[in-house]
Image (cartoon, rainbow, N blue to C red; front, side, top):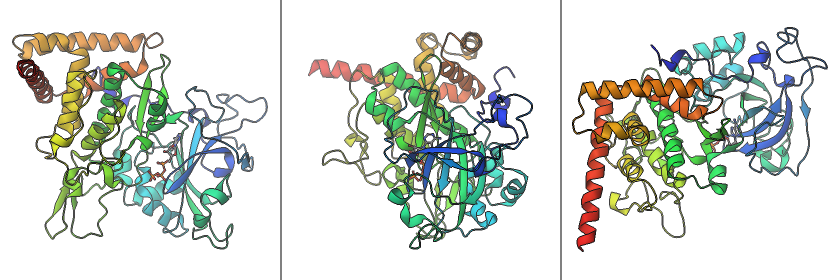
Length: 467
Ligand SMILES: Nc1ncnc2c1ncn2[C@@H]1O[C@H](COP(=O)(O)OP(=O)(O)OP(=O)(O)O)[C@@H](O)[C@H]1O
């Protein structure tokens, strides 16, 4: 199939180091670039031996054998690296291990969700076997790479080292070997990813995307979420801090969903979680927990369906992308609770925002998941809004008209892909994603919802002018 993206080779910054990067001591560790509730993230590089180029044959499989090198600069400030091209191309996430024990098996099974977006070559033989036997291994194997989902390119367990700012930022989770009062175990899990210039949150502190750019950014999040849903995975902790951002050669932001630490990715349960007691983990980030999750009360036959919960969170994050404070976070004295808000309490989006986006955001934030579009349908709506003007303007939209329009879209997608150097790679990816995931019914549903929304908009403004 022309647009079957599933077998595409996604960029892997460790590709030149095919057999390397499976040990912490192969990395040069730089400054701490982030910290969450469960981990610290450091910039990292694999130093080249003198006179070696990364793609020379000698480097492959050879041991660089450097001991871990730490750049101690405690005064580092995590400014936004809007310019790309860091000398530290990787980010190493060191999970804090206070629960899992110190065996690799225990660590990998307790922190297994973090491996859901791991590439097949992320784990070396020994750990690969453990992870494959582990609880979340099947889900990890099943999540194909996607341009809007982080890829974990290496994962290994190692002894916890004393890294920059450890003493100031997380002394309590250090092992007793480093801090006698620390609660951490001696070994933990390390994940290696590409080092992204900033998070969505950081980007939005300094940039206000215009309506078209905002649409493409929300569309990317929906494409990422749709990919997860197709693989029976719910992220359950979407927020602008867990969305990383980089820029294509045209300066266009690519959004990547990261941090799968509390995802639901169980092969047997799929997206339906039996909620039998309050001890069942419903996911983190209570503020952006979809209403059907937040209001669930445990009981013997209660099941929470996560099929549309991440799509709801995208609706809430869309406010931030559109330059409005997220209504589910406290801003001033106001804050809506996902458990109890009424849809008419949602803040109005400014008129400068395209009517179609306002409609998509409104629909995504429906309390009732049956009235909420899936991520796929919402993504189709945004795609049609951006590139489907001709189709939506037709008097009659039958299969023939759709087929003709799709032919034009295919040609445009091929063209934008082949002109990658002069155009936006992100736009080309979006067009390809749309065509790869195309379903006639979902396209029709999206067109119908868009047209209904537009009609309602016209009626509302006619009513307002009469008042
Ligand atoms: N690949 C990366 N490139 C650049 N920065 C990153 C990367 N991964 C994480 N970060 C930074 O580190 C921060 C924390 O990372 P992450 O969310 O994975 O940690 P966590 O402890 O699991 O967080 P949480 O508190 O959400 O559970 C992110 O908000 C981001 O600022």
